[in-house]
Length: 125
Image (cartoon, rainbow, N blue to C red; front, side, top):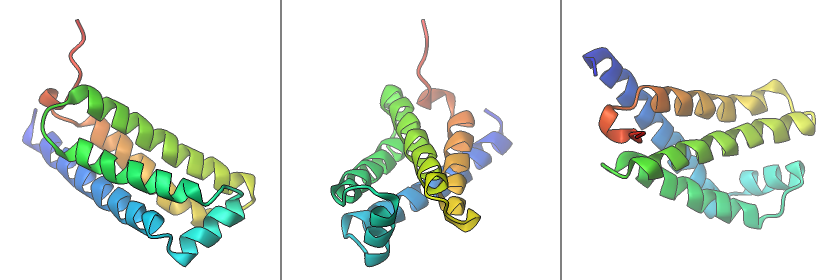
């Protein structure tokens, strides 16, 4: 892995971890703005706890060494969660600004996944 790719990986991964951790925390504590958004999108409020816990666990899985299969599942989960958020906002006719956060996180997910080091990849037989 080149030094450039390693730098890209760690910058994207750290920003991804910070974004997922911060949104996970506000979902777990049920910040008023998050509750209002979930209600606006038509989802039950228990989704906040579920998504928040999954995001925090996902951040841990992405940052710890080893467990490449777990990392693959985590990247997939982040991708599905953020693409679902984008689709949900589009479905209710939200302004483009509502798409910024999930779009940024999905881009960071893809960059982090693509540039991950070999020891963080699943080795196919």
